[in-house]
Length: 292
Image 1 (spheres, rainbow, N blue to C red):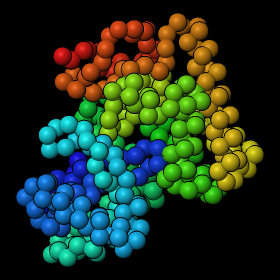
Image 2: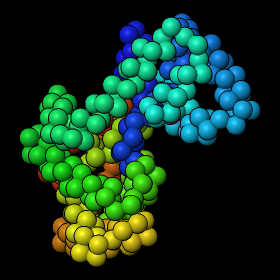
Image 3: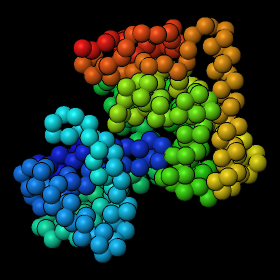
Image 4: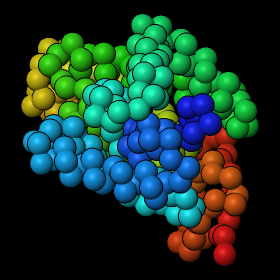
């Protein structure tokens, strides 16, 4: 959640595609200056029908993700990237059009700054993790993993991999290979919705994720992998290297690397104790607790 003037704008960061998705209804609510979501939603539904009838790509570029609704429940919501919203704003006559365009452009500019100087993003993240009580050891491991991730995505960008969908597919292949489950299933296991999966990983999960991504990049570099298919092969091989290391560790210790442990506040936990197994990690996340 973020703010534009007095309006709350819901947003979700897609860690696989490395893209911010914003609630379209929230942006429309700002443009139409409506006091409630229902009126803004009706306006958006009519606008969506008109744009679809005109054959506009704007509607096609919108997707649906679960976000917290006004009743506190997770509901599917139309979302779009800042780039799509900048074009959508032009379809709504509003005195707030220029301010919201500047605000959306600022979001993109901040992302460009972070791409130019990744230390800015890491420093901001470090402050956030410290506020949430993460240990310095965990923070260091998280930052090391992020640096490894950035080097991999830089390689992809330079070798004909499209940021967004192809990034997401390759990321999921790596994750599936090393952990045995995809990113979505891993988030479900940890009872996460819009939260960043890596922010809720144990030290061991972070280490094996980094190993898989490091191996993928080095294999891709050695083979000069270019394009989706060649990098897909490198992703499977890199993930498999981490998988072998994970299984060997689990065999030696009798514990599981991939677990349901998370850092959610106690009030948000919905973890069932049944079938729980010994966990391998250092810097223990919040303890398991079933909420009734």
